[in-house]
Length: 337
Image (cartoon, rainbow, N blue to C red; front, side, top):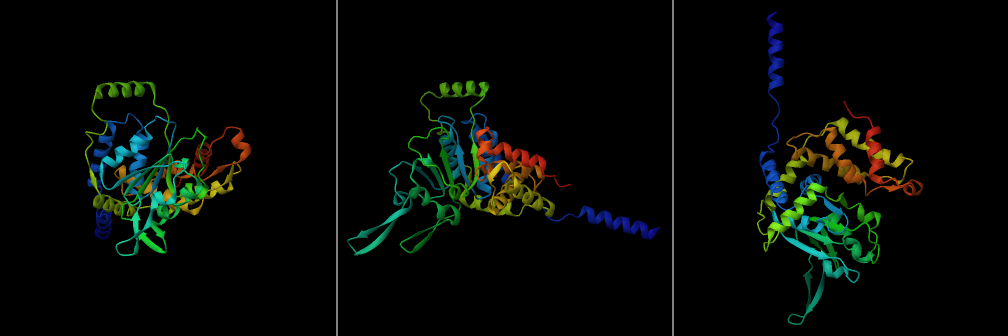
């Protein structure tokens, strides 16, 4: 009997003595403070704000898509104002050249040598407004920097300082003077976030706030919350979020299903699987958990996958969208127990 009691006691002690958990307290405090600052200007759009914060924590780029006037640009500027990091805005136009973004070598007459003058891409947070307005050769200038965080010019490689995040905007409706982003470009973005029109009560609140501003700017009272060092520290914490083996398999099954789905002409690549993994860790972190759940994976799947798959032409003619198909895939894949 004594032996049984001793064994039970040992089991209880083992159950009580958990491994050291990740301290997410400071991260949560900063996340909630940033949300409050953004909410002083942006009405609603809570899911979009969460996704932007997850993108920062996951070290990924974001494509914001929506019709003109739904606060795409101001949201990016607002987020930049809460971060104490470098910020550049690049307005994409049909006559924009790659050197206007990356920089160029200029001959210095004083020392008879070429000097590299850095372009606006050499910053931490880059807002690219109307990314589909520039031609293909200018869009292609972003391939290397978005994937490898470096630029190669005249045989020399220039590393960009961390953190480095691109937030690009585009209008899905207007086609005049635009150049569709190729799949290889879209694949560089962690998330594609679609911004919808506000609801009636939100529209009323937007008008009321604009009326009360008078001569004050929207961003004047926004406080700086996070430094570059804190962002890098939190990105390191998010990488340590626990993911069980069965959840890794769950991610793989969802992505493989996009390749085998009859409604899709093109499925997602392994880069999408890694993106879902990293994003689900970010969602777990902003929810205050040091472990990923199936709900985190579901929440990450649509913004990660919807721009990485191509709907079969016959299904597209029926009005079916990539996000609807992904929702169906998520519903059919069995959730790990």
